[in-house]
Length: 253
Image (tube, rainbow, N blue to C red):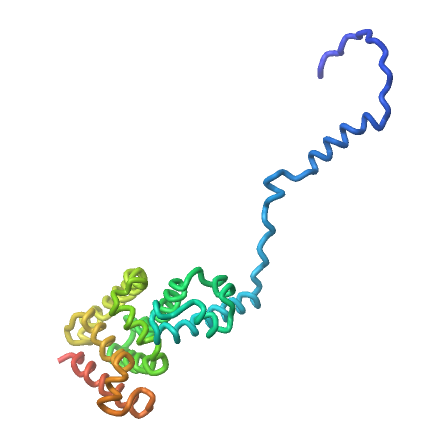
């Protein structure tokens, strides 16, 4: 509690009108109510991404990537324009740039999606898998993939042949991590006497080479045999022969 103030005689003042006394208070209240400069310039929050909107975004991205795959596989990166991709995907050029910052980003998106699909059969090889049946199924799935995604297979091959200038980061991370994991699985099978002693990396390379060949060199196969992956009987014949070649060499002696 503060001490009582001493009484001081002051000259009389004329009382101010109530309106005058209220004005400063009103000014102060107004100053407090006025938003700061930072608050005034703060952007409105983005529209919430509902499940429906997220689905629409995913569908639009897929349409753009599908259109780009068709063009890139025929014309390459430099022979394809953003305008062609937008027109094929039935979107405006401006709308395309909402989903992808550049043509190169679209290209990497196509290849990344392809790599993920291409590696899916390899992910299925686990320690508890029977190695002969697992590799048999892998060969069948990979040749089927070559049949159903011939453009994707050829585009991936073209990128790698050129030195993988845009895909190399993916190869050095996601691909390497998966291959390292699966070579350990194969090494475990060999150590357990379930497979003949082969180098796991070279086994994976041989599987890639024999299964990809049917898509990457389809014109050559057609020129030699007049047949190809568009024929179901040929797919089954190719699958059986590759399985026999690989698995006969892998069975323990």
